[in-house]
View 1 (cartoon, rainbow, N blue to C red):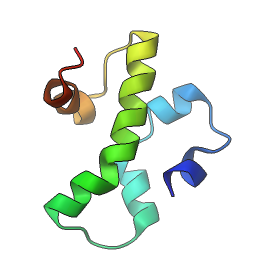
View 2: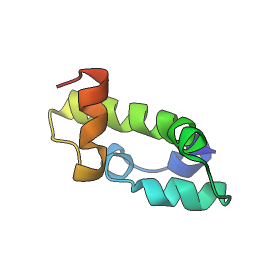
View 3: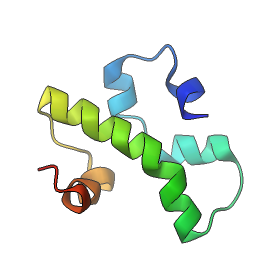
View 4: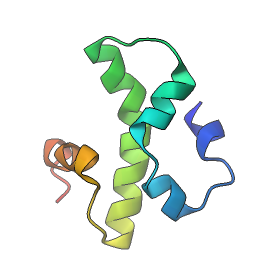
Length: 71
């Protein structure tokens, strides 16, 4: 689902993609554990893009860098 969502978008568009867009695509309510799993791919992709560009993560993702020690 994530690959279909980002297909054809620029790296900048993907780097700024709000997590709510992916959650809307999933379309079902998620428990906290399933939410973390659902966002894992997007989190990893966004972290890689921001790290490669040297740009700061948006506030909604900033905690993920701390969790993964990617600062």
